[in-house]
Image (tube, rainbow, N blue to C red):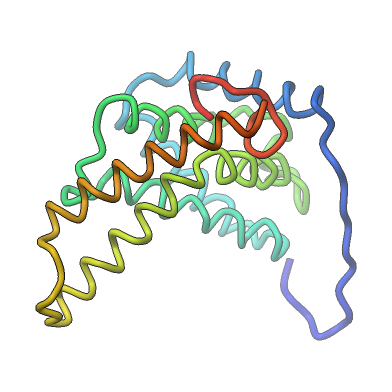
Length: 188
């Protein structure tokens, strides 16, 4: 749907603990189906292409674009995300590689609403990873711009990933859930 100059309509809804558990269950099911990293990344790219080609509502489009940093941190050779950290991001992306999700994507106007909801949940759950990666990318750009008083990229990566893990531990301790308010899982 294209944007117009008419006043926007704001629709809000709250997810209960059982709603969040339902989305968590769907994410777990997707993780079980998609174990291969290449398959997950290809599936995400295909979903994103299909979603953007369908001219989705602006709120869906803005959320679909939030997948870019998650994919980038997996593909970024400088970031060197590995082990459990890499698995967390790939597990989160697995839902978007699944062509048969909650609301069939081919339904005009609403086909990607479930994806938009899941992107918000995944982004909240991976906030420490997203923040650390954004800081790393900014540091890399500063180095490329010629700033000389910065630590080497490798040192910065180690510090930022360590900080990411500490923040994730603190987040788990504060929340009982899938992103803010949901249940702690192997993903979030």
